[in-house]
Length: 640
Image (tube, one colour):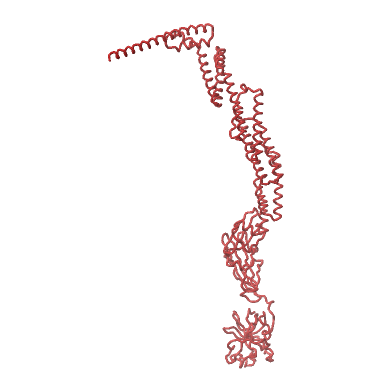
């Protein structure tokens, strides 16, 4: 065990001695080098070779094994400090440039190059005592060759990248163009001058790119690329007139083919795309625009012709397509109006095409409305639509009481309507032959309101705006009811007139010979009771009935003989119960007695000189009058 310990201690001592010997040798070598380097530096200094002198003084100064003439070395290095500083600057720049070249970082290379150029400029303006040495250091680091090699490598890579874009058809990154423009003329190494070389290169690239896009049929991308390319050149202050020329020629070729092939949709799309890009490409005065406008006029004429032929949908489709190129609001509105004029249903369907419209009618040029339409549907709704001069459509609707099956016609009552309240006349079946149900409906906003509904033979609007219903169903023959607007806008009965020209003038004795004919005759009403009145003309008596208030006196009576007769019973003091039917006879033949004259002062009363058996005064007739046929019964319309 002691032997092992002794052996280990010996080895340790040997190792320490060896290390000490090595250190002694190294220090001896360092001392030798320091002394040699100082002597060599002094020799170069004496020969005014400042660069090697600075280098050997620096080596001696950096040798820390041996301190030797420190003050002398420090003095000389201080004197040669500009060379030391320049050498460090050049070394750092060389390292930056080489690293950027190796990693293909052009921005880093340009930054290093610009910093280097700034250093050179500053050095030229500084201490000129070591100007030759500065150049010597630059050559030592091969700065010019290093920079040239870098720019050449980048130029080649940029050109290759542009060719790669063309091969791939991908032009999203064209920064290589602008990098080429950043390479200084002094470091451009082609036989062709830099500017000429770059212009040829860029023009060839753009021409190939744009022609390929145009040939591929992607017109939008073609123009977009032309616009983007030109804008990029403008941003980099580079004149590239070939871009606009390529865009114009390519657009002219495409649009000409569209026109010749009659491809209107393609023409419109391509023309719109070209017009959108003219400002960016600088083609505001291009002849292509003249060509486009000429074709627009041609297509407008075609659309107008389609409208004239009644092909309104085709005309509208073409106008609407052209509206992307030019304002077509006027011809579109004109076509819509023409369509609605020719087909009133179109106006309503343009608002709601899902409704099955019935009884469709329309009109034109009402007030400031070029065209309007009226219709109903199966749900008893009334519709009124109007189209303004610009083609805008407004439709109102509301429920009405008439059923669609019973409606005969619809019309706008223009004499009563206002722009804010159209009034529609609905004519429908009244249920009685010869009579029509006339109904007026007003559209006020979203509401439809009935103003009047009367069954009559005819209808008329007078100049003062009142409504005349001739021969109303509930009226007398020749009767005309006059309706005027009330405060709420509805129409109410304000007067009633009768036309006497339709009544046949007869004598009382002739009444029973004209069954159901309108008759007029003069007679004296001699008595009145709850069921009517008794009238007398000469020896002839007439029984009068009707919804009138009869009074005694002499009148002109208008009415109809209905074919019925009544008996006058003297024992009962009036008309005997019930009526009887008998053939028409002239009662004047049964009695030849002339009627007595009446005194004008006793108008409305029987003559006292008349035979007492006819029941004058308080005494009734002694027996039936005209007992063969009885007394004709007349349904009275009116008395005057």
